[in-house]
Image 1 (cartoon, rainbow, N blue to C red):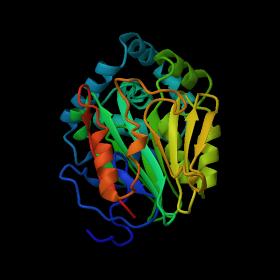
Image 2 (image 1 turned 90 degrees about the horizontal axis):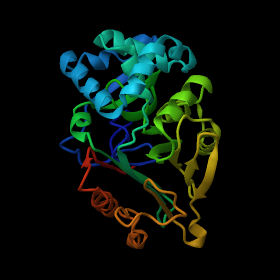
Image 3 (image 1 turned 60 degrees about the vertical axis):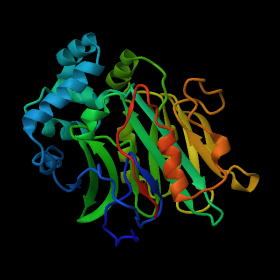
Length: 336
């Protein structure tokens, strides 16, 4: 497919994307629906046009299953008792967006907050940022879930509009206000990969008492506020978080690519592209890049990167999907 005009379907999460403005790809048969979310609307109302396209009973059942399958019972009990206090500690506009969806779905606010606070401990990710011989930046990722069959039916592509224009884009799940991959047109792209550190109770305490940002909410804030690749990297590296994560950022000019290894307080490691010294790509899975990958899960395959073509990147990420415990939820190639 040839490059589409401005305003066409953007580069989104769970896919391959690049940091430019044009999109060109064959649509996946499982491509999620595309919706507009107006940032000019009141936060409580922003997601209602999206919810109208889904069966509310099925949606409530799916969200409840995800919560019950992935949240310990003691955490459920704690959050349900403390929900009215918890919402005062969580940043706006996200908590009002969550409340608006919960009211529309007649879904427990405590469970909906948990759905949005839970750091996806069952997610397996691979992100790539690379520079080709012409200086073009490529940013790709896939995302796998043990409960991918449910999320496949809840996945939506979103164009966030401000004053009638696209401010940024991303892919998310209905009921979930954060983004794990997004694009600020003509500026930068971001993806997040799980870093398996800490426990549930630590994340909850960080959210309650320290007012730290959830992982995916910071991606949205960065896409909304940062005006450049450098500003995005700084915000993603320095903002306190409720859990550890790897942020992968791609820009629009040569050498604008980096993997940020984060703990809750700040950066553990900054791993930029260095093409002049042969480091023209970086691959991040769910392990610190300076440590050996587990033998049972080595998705890095550095020796494979002799070519940087769209077809190769697609096949590479397909080959990285773990077959034993996870399903590949959604995968697209979107070169600019």
